[in-house]
Length: 318
Ligand code: CP
Image: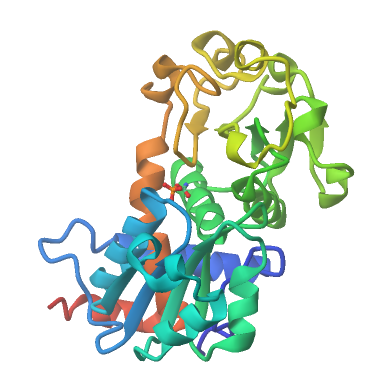
């Protein structure tokens, strides 16, 4: 039976079964990464358009590679060289893009709600590649995938997520995803970087990183989102780093086999030391690689692909 959804806007309304399907499908696609020809004809003849109104290194290239590995035609729309700079509205730009006969549009925008708005205006499938402070669902899925791959489970794991929770769309998607999959999630930040009543989402809150990290299986560090902060929310970067930055000393308090994660881009020496970022416990580069498999799964499933057909597709590399 086909996947029920055509759009991926967030993990807030995803069921644990849907998340499991994304992860299992990504696992099947990852198995072709070791092959000489890393391509399957799953989306041959379909057009995927990357519509990024905000900068990106990882997500845009990852979606492009994912679509190409599924044999789709891909167009990368660059806002800086488009008519957006001449005053064209978002909706007119999106309708123009769709007139190029897109099947799926991957959109990143600094305003929360833009991907949802596009689902109401366009016929294409819409994938949220990060909208303002709202959600970044494919980042959440690739993080869950990486945790499951490394730890062989998600349920019951002690995860600490540290840093600028309040301004992070990555944090929001991961909070929904990790709690739905049964993780024991603690958010660690100064009170000014935590949304009010966040405990209502089924997480614990701590302001003391040294206490919270004890016995952790997964340590997830977040970047300080200075571009989204409207006023000073902590005295200095130096103080933040001392109290909430992950260094070798604090990491020793976690489980010996704890993994360290970061969605990127990293600010070395602020939320994470170079020693930790480059340590054997760090899975930061693996997160990026896994992002390709997860985005292949998302594009494939939203386009109506069947999970039980992937094995036969894998034999048809082109
Ligand atoms: N994690 C993430 O969204 O990175 P980019 O901003 O480089 O896409």
